[in-house]
Amino acid sequence: MDIGHDIMGTIIINSYAFGGGSSVSAVSDLYSKDNAGNGANGGAGGFGDSRITLTTGSSNPQHDVEMPQVIFPNFGANKISFNANFTGTASSIAWSITELDNFQGLITGISPSTGSSAQFEPVFTVANNLGARAEYEVSCVVTNAGGATTQAFPLSLLFA
Image 1 (cartoon, rainbow, N blue to C red):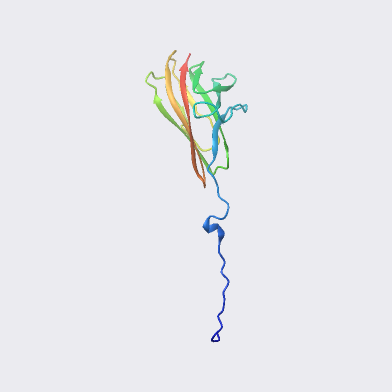
Image 2: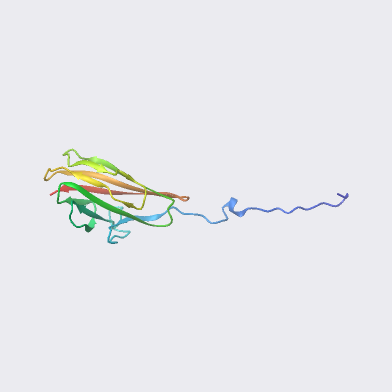
């Protein structure tokens, strides 16, 4: 290097390191459709106009069941199908079931009690206890780089 002459280097700045690149938002508008495609975001109760499909025993599925009340017409195995729908892109989905009140012993088992895909189909085993009630909450957490979005779906179960 000669005296009096500076060598200027090239400086490259990664704009993504400063938030100038693309960003990901957490998913929004999380709700459930039934297996026939009924259901929509919005509506009362914080869970939109969510719908589920109820399949009891060997009978045909009942689509467009509106939560929170679900009436089981048969004791034994009863499948409730949830289909998570949302705006955005998910990197993971996690379902879980929480028992809030089963003091009358209506539900004797649930399988599976967790799930990791958009469709979640737990089978509730219903006791032969006509008129019994139970309260559960099914939660769906959808996660991506923007964060996690949680939606709780209340279930008021009745054997009638």
